[in-house]
Image (tube, rainbow over the protein chains, first blue to last red):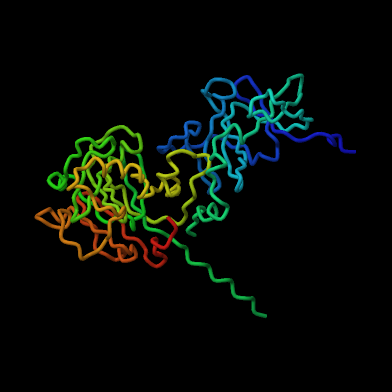
Length: 159
Length: 231
């Protein structure tokens, strides 16, 4: 018998002393810190990009928004899938400690919760926020998203 | 028994690019987008200061035949620390002449990744995408992104009537245009590089005439015409 019948899987991540959860289905991998490439831009939440498996992945430090301060040190990058209306893209979230896969039952967020809170779960005596990456990380407003055909055209792989 | 022949590999499509620096930051631009590269020293007499442009990044206008080119300071455009530009790129099919620090090298890219959608501000107009060259990530600039239509309107409005550029928003590359300050008039031609519209024709050409710039020759066998690529 499956003990997790009514549970969903989540990845717990740590930002300083606090833990947060992300749906495990949205996580691609956990990687060691690597070089961040910076270039001029005006999206303040994005630090730069890293190169991973041939892909260019934007790095988004969500700590300032979640715990009120930027991370002074980072141990890993949690690479997650950020959903857009015309597909998904990877985004790298700096974290300060190991991540853990858990099974838990999520209580959906209420209207009183912040937009980046997808729900809540209880684990080891803590109540943990489940993050909504779509609300937590930057992206185009739906009104200005390109049509899927245009987006495909934009993925201009020369090879 | 004979094994089936392996499928022929598709030729890799590549695009010739120029890696250049603005305030120490590395950028790339398609060589097909660059009509000329000039030393700023040769431009002093050919430019006119714009009194009240309202745009910090544009301080000078370059009269070229009947067209006006706006000289955009790359560092101000990208919000980088000020620098002393050494070169000007005259960009094809735009009204922009771009001030840059210098050229790093000329190379080819085989893959251009769209700018991740997490980047959702002005940079979407600045860059065609991002490429990786020698394990370094480099943004590939969009030539038409240096001046928006609104900025061009503002600049045109700031000029005196007789100096206003022609209303078309693109500069033709017609070879029949009268000689301009860029193309002669006693300027030091060794400091000028005219990039042909077809970059494939660059291959096999003599080394570029830049002082201090050494472009490696590129293999033309797999070079396709970048002008056919979506920009």
